[in-house]
Length: 432
Figure 1 (cartoon, rainbow, N blue to C red):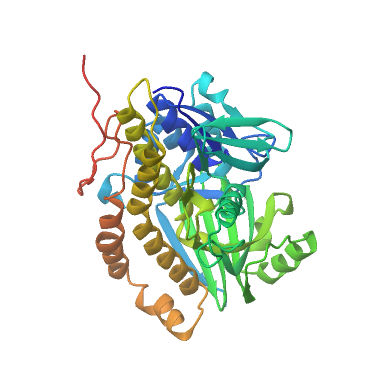
Figure 2: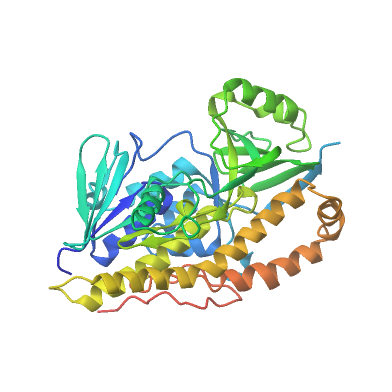
């Protein structure tokens, strides 16, 4: 494989999936994480769908993941006045998921995950077919390609945009400096799971332009309050403690369960507030730099599609990278043409589903917040019957999920077998 090396910008879940995938492929890498620790204790809850659980099981993490997560097995809805695939959605406290993924890396691979690395510039070197990433501490890292997995405010995406402008690309082709629009904001808090709330419970409390959502893991629970902004914005907003207190008071008496109100469980020490970004960028790659996950698409969190899509991004991209490196042979590296082809193939595989999930996520957010009379009627009456929900799962969700990709080059046992077969089987282990 020559000296092919991948620089991963961002050490969150998507970046760690890429680290696992490249390690399994025998491809050198380094992860540059801007924070001082990979495991940030202040993170929110996330839900992994069956395809994501299946993918992470290819890394040998199935047992740890199933021990730490709680299957989402019951959802309750209030107002303010899937085993088809052999697996269910699983709720995690985000820091716990990141810890499992990080500690699941072999020690030599963990040594390549570097913290306190705030990326400042990314320079592509056409003469040497390399890319150099510089950090605020003065360190530099040179590799064959760079993958931006650095979130909604991605520095990698900003650098890609600036490179296009320097090359004379018209602004109409380039992404906006702030490509995502925000129509809603959220207040979230995590808290120890009360004995009165069983693990695996999900819930929602709906109101006009507002929603409260509950997710209960094994040890902790998460509440997210959504509220429509007075007008959409693309600006980054930093909310103060006063802002959080005001939003909390407006939701304080909303029911969380039959016996608990939001004020009964709210803990400001584990709370946060932010605008919710929505959108998909126009440009996913340039030269030897490519974007994945939140750096190239953002969904409102109601449907839990953000991280799950990010994981599928990494699968599609790393499959293409591994194939390009293998085709180049052990004494060479993929050419720029080969890299471009790999990036284009990744986008062709992913873009249609990204757009579909963006529409679905946006619709669910507006249904739960009664954004219009039609949304209200659908949320309160048309979509409520169990038979409608079963039809949606069996004829919309499952047919989409069963087509999810896996790492083609990682051999493992098939962890989840149900009544509906997966389209892409996991490569079986060779018995020697």
